[in-house]
Image (cartoon, rainbow over all chains, first blue to last red; front, side):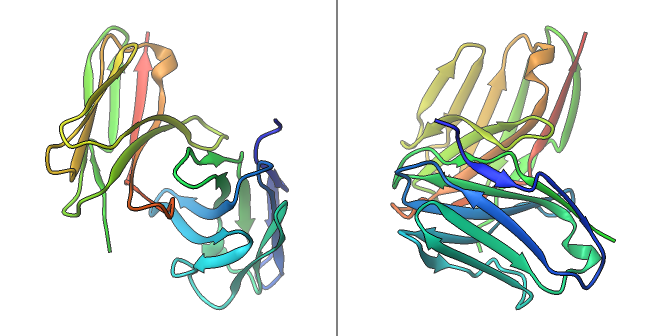
Length: 112
Length: 111
């Protein structure tokens, strides 16, 4: 299995631009999670889906952030407009209920 | 909000030394996981403990879940440079698979 796939691996953009991060979970996994990791705040859960339905988005920082999961094999996290404080590493993870969460390699985002 | 505090935040030791990392919370968790994260990669699960007082051993690593299921520790015996990384504890509740991650302990093991 290829594991969780994220793209792009690195993204540099200017403040105000739209950023879209992509994730392909492991086949057969019915949970998908988006996390953000910074030195200051550690690893924070932003939102998670079960069977493509958003279950808990209480970690989404503000309305500039949105996430979708149109099907079982694809999810996006969008930031519009982006700000410098959004700079972080964004991870996607997937799992089956009660089993191990598998993390992708992350997308390192820098907003100038 | 459930919080998991890890200590120490940073640890730099020499090869062969022993160390313990602590993970503490005021909340009860149904399970506690430990992850290791290497630079440029996502966290990788090391172990899951689910019973209060449970002790699990993974080669040179020993994991313990507190009796009250609010805290956990990770002990490494005879640390090696390959143990270098960020260690994260994570608490889980129920079957929703949602995890709350700790603040992290960054370990460096030098020759």
